[in-house]
Length: 411
Image (tube, rainbow, N blue to C red; front, side, top):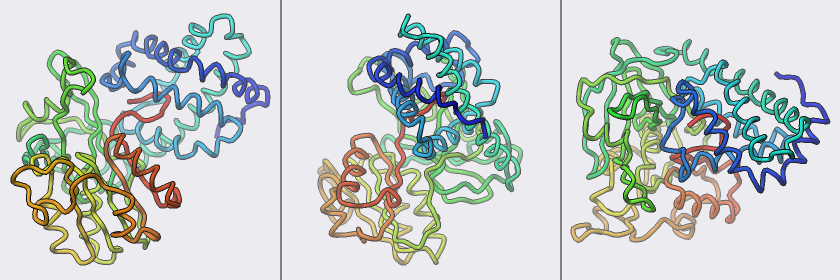
């Protein structure tokens, strides 16, 4: 554990909250500008989340503000620290990377705040940064040791071969991976992700996270990837580089560099009923959970509720129906926002429209269940806030957002 922060540092950091509320985004954008002058550090980041229209600077600004607001109550940030450490572990962030971020962050504060960034403020933020950094370095080291010591485990990047590829819908494919060395793999926790280090033509090194969509086993993993289109608000922007590469270039026999499974979103082992709620390709970690639940006859009753546009983009529908048909206690519901002409209610889908709180209250064990959610921001915003408002405690709501998280270094 790092040494406790001094009272002076806590007071000084708290005093910067108004400045961070006003200038936090400018500070984080400037920080990334400094960081990316170093190619080695730049390559640690997912560049699709950066830039003036990227979501990572905004997420980081929120994280820095939350840290300042809770600097005297760091227990409130325990969950956030674990999420950061898990993401860093996937990206192989090492202790030697942290000084670069410290330098860039402090320089960015000085650049944006100018004379208001006094020596006392810079000193306090330096101490606060390294307090958090030492917490993360310690936790990440523990994760790395556990990953390397686990049966089938490894540290860093390991070569995997694509064994086969299956089309799941018009826009989604599954890729079945086996280790190139013929060995076993870590049995992941259902819901966790893998990180890939890719080298794309004209893009150089790229890192991406993809959820594991299969139940844990010793032989390999399945990932299920949607071809990402250009952003709706920027139709002239390029489509997702990594997802397009997987869909267009990856073949059986293609070798990929893969980090061990990581992530703090995973199925627990409690006795409560489970409701798995997904939107679009957000079903991938929940299919891993469903397969795991189906393989364990002692697990509690399970509801798998999925929302998507129509059957053309409804991925893994046959697999989910197969699991429900062969497993006692599994119930399914599919919501189609815009059913196609050939989509038959009761065959392809169960409800038209979007998943609602009223439907969940009427059709699931709402008062007892643990809810696991994964999907795009609007989906999570509506359902997570709705569950909270309906009195579901935070201990019964687990969710994963596909995109950047509030963190101080990675993604």
